[in-house]
Length: 516
Image (cartoon, rainbow, N blue to C red; front, side, top):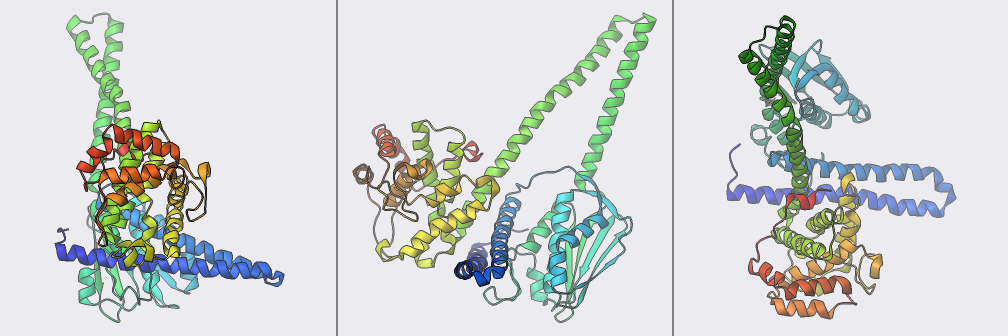
């Protein structure tokens, strides 16, 4: 895919902000309304039977938010070519299609759709099961979404020469030629994103196409307005990765046969007691080479583990980068804040798991600002004019978003509390003293330092000496005195002066800083 020019990149960023704002606001509004009505039912015992329905609405809203975050993370991984490599295996295509339809059965039954399966007998191929499953899920869910209630769609599988074809044909409204040409562009929507009838970020078909191409295949689309659409997944029966895998298996089998032959030769020579010195030396050399190959296996496993850890840290960076689509200032601010907070944390002697938790929390501490109005995310007036409800809301929203990721449960409290004050006058919960998570206390100082140094439309950034003096004066009221003492100790050694000399470059973070 050709790189986007500057105008196209700007359009995609604007569209991403619009979609994210709309898609996040919809489930949040649903959850908020359901919680308010649930509170009313608690006051009236006669409404006990309705509570289950409202709890289900809340659960569905949370799942929708989680799905949006999962789609953003997958988009980030695909864009950075960081998807986890999994082994190539023989795949039972009919079973995979049945599993996908089963996972969507609730939506199919709700719309009373009729599904016709054709040509599914004994269709198998060698590929990566997880990627194929994700592609099929996107294509079938797209048909479920756009097929009118009470109508039908067809899923057809066939083998043509050395390729497998999977066709998904719906009876929906169809697509124009212009939409077909742009269909696999990220964030593309056939309808106005603020007035469309179907939800979604417009990433599903783009991600499916990228995954299909990674398997050596392609997704084709044929459609006319008013005549539905047919999406055809074309995959080689034997993917490039499968061919490499078979070659490696053949080489491994050859090595095993060579090993068995070498062992047999040794046994024969031992029994005959006619071994010549040169033959024995050669045989020992073969065995030594085999042993060296086996000894390299642990190193290969360690290398693969390191790659997976880097993929995890890239996923965290991807979620932070999503905020950059909303505000370039916040993206750079987050990275500098993370570097400052980690510097103080190490000075105090923090180690695992506090250090990676602190680094991730700093990168994501303003992720809740995705849902804030433009004038607050990119302020053009002093903060005194900003609604306290908006400011406090970004702490709660950010913590709720982070908490949806199972591995970041311990990071969410730090994100929520980074605007609490040592004297208990902060927000959103009014925590005081050591009731504030330690990571949040470091983050509060780092956040204040970077904000004070930054230039804003309504004021220039302060010089470093002024910032250091202001933070020192706030010890015991706004900030934890112990953290301020660490901050001042680093200032005396010139650490902050060196950091400010590089401003506004982001702080340097190692991958190990972000691995839990």
